[in-house]
Length: 147
Image 1 (cartoon, rainbow, N blue to C red):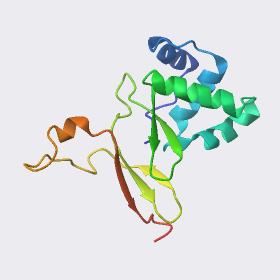
Image 2: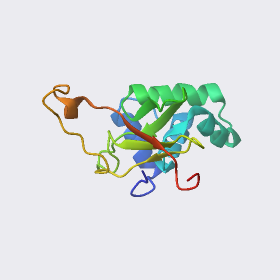
Image 3: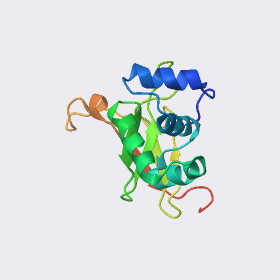
Image 4: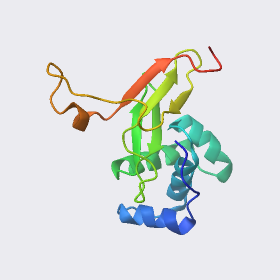
């Protein structure tokens, strides 16, 4: 899901400090990349993108986990045993916490689906409080390219 605008360095620092995290250079680089990523990204994808800036894979992974633990990012396995990370809701509401993903079962491409694409309704025989407890929705099929 695309972000409403590119955050400034001060915005990124504020976001980290509000979550009681130090605004270190590698953490800022990881957070900046998550803001710019239109879909959930794997650790490997992010490490490859940040390697030219001098950040090694372990540093990137450690900071991804720090952001996840602080509630800034979410870590999700979309069924292929690869953790993907994405930014959670900004304080201005520009990215929603729970939204559905589409995974192409041919090429593996992952995309965020717009809010309202999937509607969850509780039924008499279904789990109680279904709407409040769903943390992940995933649809699989073939994307436009593979169809």
